[in-house]
Figure 1: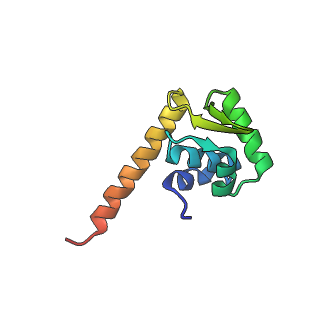
Figure 2: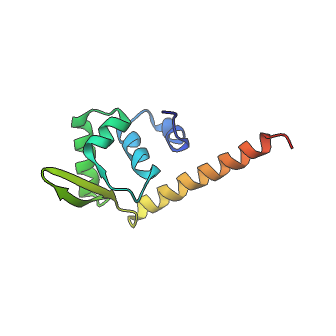
Figure 3: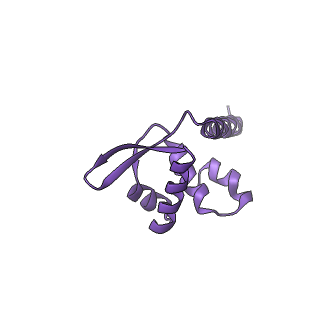
Length: 107
């Protein structure tokens, strides 16, 4: 999987697991997810993902969507002010990248 622009932009902060998790969640902000999906897609350990999701839930960044058996499905809280700003930042990065890529294409 190729690194996203969001992840590349935050590399200045280091290769932090929480940035990888946040990047994964922001990529599809209105899609419910399970902890196992985050572990599989980010390649961050299950223990670390569990800690990150717990902290995100306590800060209101994610919320429980529904529970099926023992599995809890979560959703990114797109109304959280920080998440709104990060989604806008991600969209701006993508837009700028698209414009620069289009400028490189010969007419």
